[in-house]
Length: 288
Ligand SMILES: O=C(O)CCC(=O)C(=O)O
Image (cartoon, rainbow, N blue to C red; front, side, top):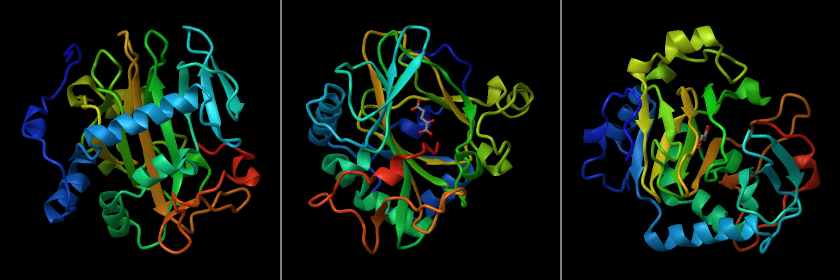
């Protein structure tokens, strides 16, 4: 794995990384103090392969959803074209949203460990703000600037704090892994508008405080939404895909239209056996 960026080593954090099955007090405290928590390889080798294959099938148009929002890289300078529904068969997508309407991804979103965590921080009824694939295709990716994932910037009336980010490929410095500032969630909301200004970056994300969040394929990491994070570009010949899901109170509404979001835990939660395509009104506008 690469090592070019100044970093506080988190080697100890990863040695003997084991799968978290119980979100106990020690882990709750670690998450609240560091703003992230490695959950281990929540995806078995088989489940990982299943999701890798499914996202490939979605990108190539073998599995289609009418109301799925996709962002396609147009060229090496990072220009992106957005489509509603699949239009182009390529692995060069930047981002794909609305994956909860796919039964395989929905089943993963509803993993019992994520339910434990969501029930602890949110309550019984939980919706998701987004369920997105972030892809850094070989030689064709953009860096993502420093930001927090804040509700106001996203146009919703609460500030979610629970995001589960899962590596679908190994994420390294060379493939454009995430970088974070551990503990930075404790500053609270630095910038309601999502991205930091240059001055804020200098204050809150100085090099000495940044770590590279490298991850193995199949590994899930719990992220506090106020944790400062960014990600780099992919200079290798393999893709770096990750699946990121933000959980929140089911009563959370958009600030403009008062709309709620897909429920994944509790009463009337989506069920992988019967999940339907996303309703038209839920894709009228893009929040986040
Ligand atoms: O996967 C990445 O590169 C960034 C993902 C991200 O910003 C997020 O999950 O909030």
